[in-house]
Image (cartoon, rainbow, N blue to C red; front, top):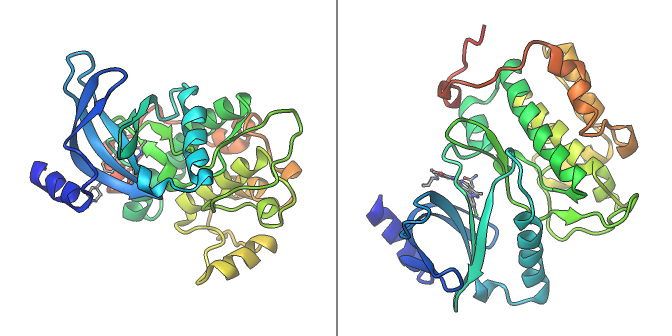
Length: 303
Ligand SMILES: COc1cc(C(=O)NC2CCN(C)CC2)ccc1Nc1cc2c(cn1)c(C)nn2-c1cc(Cl)cc(CCC(N)=O)c1
């Protein structure tokens, strides 16, 4: 509500109640605090301009935090990559601009938050639900890889859900552009959540790191916890290097085989996002065209 938003803004004095884009001359009323991630705070904003009265998500980064050139470049890289993307399963990029204090990125609002909140609430999802989500995530990744973009930080919290529970992949803060065929990326500043072994071993990495993350996402959705979860980050890294993960024998063998194919240590052995839709996982049963919003809270009877 408004006074909670005002209270939140009071904590961050640099967040104005009205955000003005001096180039387009459109101003936005800053509303509910949605969350924060990295240097960014995210607020719900509504354009006061008659033109587009949509409610958007606005990521706000204080310029005070963008002191090092590397941080500025990262922010600019995120914007440059995201602004040229357009796909039904990617978060829409509307605009970005700056004022004295902050940088602002106007993005598509996903009112049902992300798969992270759904996972926390439900723990496990059913196979039909996993098929529904994976088909849309893979579709978004096919678009990215066709445009030579590696997301590099696919995780439940970056798979946003709109009011119709459609998947919208967001947060291109670690994304990179492959400039020539076969190019292997050597570095990545920032730590992805689902780290692939080739990144850990600094062997050079490419599109296959996204497939690894998709394997971790599917595993987490149907098993209820991440595949390499450990008490410490160090132990997690040892498990990833040793490819040490267990799939419960109770899991449908077709789903288990699909997860194993994506979590292979050797990147070139993993399926491409273009091959994935042909996996038997997607023909276990007809893919649901939509999900009831009850899936956000209770296990559905989907028969
Ligand atoms: C109505 O839409 C939303 C609502 C909420 C929400 O209810 N957050 C509550 C706010 C109050 N606190 C106490 C609990 C969480 C959270 C996210 C929403 N939508 C929403 C949030 C969005 C986006 C689209 N749509 C995009 C794109 N980027 N971000 C984004 C950006 C940052 Cl920096 C941080 C977060 C929070 C992490 C998360 N996964 O929630 C999100």
